[in-house]
Image 1: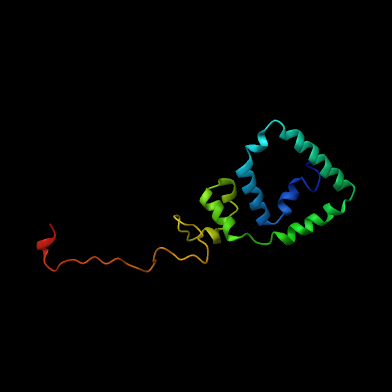
Image 2: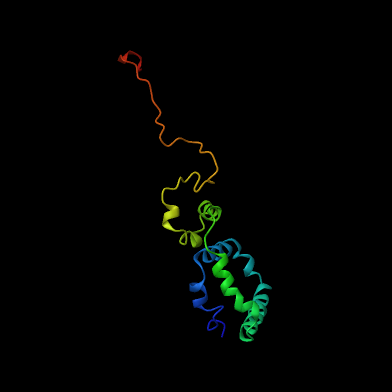
Length: 137
């Protein structure tokens, strides 16, 4: 069975690095409609069978894949978080760590670190008020 296999079962999802889970959710949110096409299901079934057969045969590619996933997906780039926040992808938003989402400026969440801010957070606009009340109205 597909779900009992270690590359497609629930443990595969839980054992993969959080940054990879985030990228998978981003991919699914962006492309789910393309996978609903009638010709896609036979394509998926064929390729799942190929992957299962390779796994059962002890294929070298499969053996090294888990290790590569652990090494390659160590952290999530800031621009990926920014894309998810701006796109408001609910499925992927739940995987954005609170430390990233805290203190966001919603008009420009997670701006690039080398960008110049177009605002001054410490600047207070001063309004000059005349000493007498004659010019108020």
